[in-house]
Image (cartoon, rainbow, N blue to C red; front, side, top):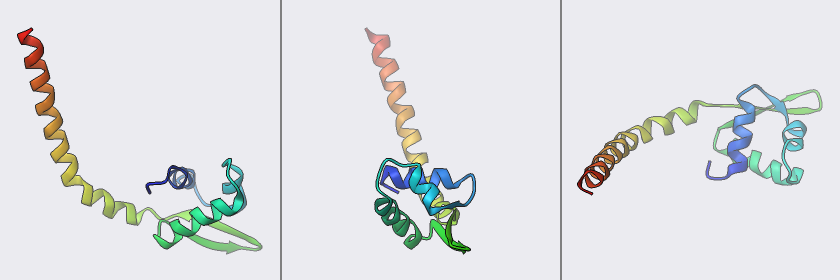
Length: 97
C-alpha cells in the first residue's frame, strides 16, 4: 500500500476486473514492473486473479482493507482530537496579537 503505483492499480480495479495487459497499458512503467506490483498485491490478498481464456483477469478484494480501516480508526480519533486542540491553540494565539 505504500507504493503509489500499487494504490493506483487498486483504484483502477474498483471499477471491476481488468486483464493484466490493460492494467499494464495504463502505467508508464514496464509490464514486468506491473507484474511485480500485481504479485505483491496478490500475496497481500488485495488482488485476486482468475483466468478467462488466455487472459488473466485481476479483481480487487477489498476485505483486507476493511481490517486496516478498523485498525486505524483509533488513530483517526486520536489525531482528530489533537488537530482540534492545535486549531484552538493557534486561534487563541492569534487573538492575543
